[in-house]
Image (cartoon, rainbow, N blue to C red; front, top):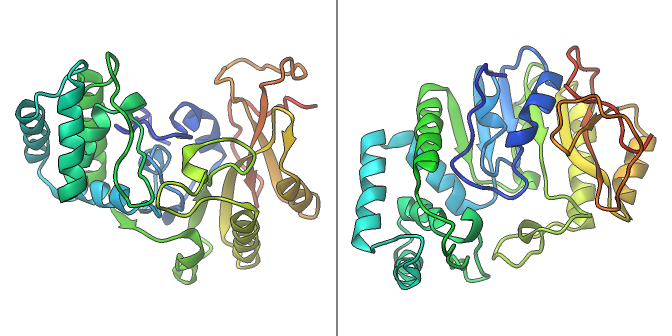
Length: 302
C-alpha cells in the first residue's frame, strides 16, 4: 500500500476508500500483476503497489472514462470539464442546466462529459437505465465540481499516468485468467448478494447480481486456488437479519482464511458483540495466510 491513500474522484457505491488501511495490509507483499476484477471507482487498485494493475469492470462507460484519464493530457481534461461547466452554466442550483447537459450526454456519449455529469448528479452517483441513458437526478444544493473533487481527480490521474496499468471491460465470467501466474493476485469486490444497491438490481442496462453470479464467482476462485494463484474476496456474511448462506456454506467447506473487517471504519480494537440490528459482518476472504495484520480483524459476531 502507498504511504498516502489516493481517493477516487468518483463516489462509487460500495467503494473501499475508507477500508484500504484495513484490507491492503492483508494483501501479498510482492505482486506482479494485480487484477482489480470489479474495479468500480478504482479505490483499491489505484492504491496497491504492483508491477502492473489490471482494472476490469463490466460498466463500459466507466472503463472508457478511466482510459481517457490515462491517455489525455491533464490540462486538456481539466479544461474540458471547466468549459462544459461554463457552457451549460452548471451549479448546485441550476437544475435545468443539469438536465440539458444530461440530455446532451445521452445523445452524444462524449466520454469526459460523463465525469462532468457525475460531478453535479445526486450524491455523485453513476446510474443508467436499460437503454444505457444516464438517469441519476440532479444533486441540488449538494453536488458540484468543487476543489476537493478537483484535487482528488488530479492526484488520481497523475497516479494512473505514472503506473503500468490496463483497462478491460469484461464480465468477471469472461475475464481471461489463463495468463495469470502464481506471482499475480486477484482482488474481487463484487456486488454484495444480501445488501441493497442500484449496482446489483439488474436495472441499469447492465447485468445484475444474483445467486447465479455468486456461485460462478466462487467457482472461479476455487479454480484460481487450484492453480496456486492468490486471491482476496470482499463480501459480507451477514447484514442486518440476512445471512449469505451460499458464502457461508462455501467457506465451511474450504480452508480459506476469513479476515474480519471493521465496517464502522474505526481504528480501535473494538471486539464487543454486535449491538444493533444494522451491523454487518464484512470479511476479506483469502486463500493464503496474510503475513501482515490489518488494523482490525476481530469478528463482530464472536
